[in-house]
Length: 146
Image 1 (spheres, rainbow, N blue to C red):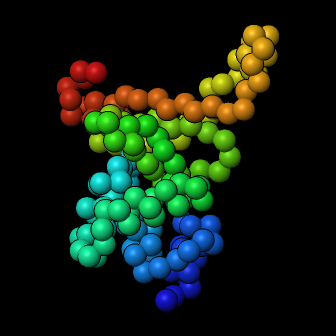
Image 2: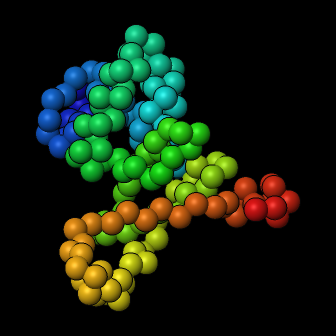
């Protein structure tokens, strides 16, 4: 195992359990661009490692999400979408519903929202914002229909 492999495993799984299948899954994640479902990731993994089961990919993806290596960015056709998130700090995502392109965007939640929640007796402990639409390339291919 190379130093790059060890670094990838540390980043992907936060120092948790490592194995050859988990390395294969982490490598597959780094080869994907945009949003992907676990089933799509499993198909990518099986291109080079046909013996790795989909259940293994699901478990590895859950571990990578816990470590912050991938993030949930919405859903498509009833399946959770993940993306490799390389941006630092608090942010959100613009997700193309056609090709799966993911773009980082600043948080749209401002102090006013938190103050209004407090006035209603809520204490904000977290939030999720994903914005869906068509990227410029897909919009051009679709002839401008949205």
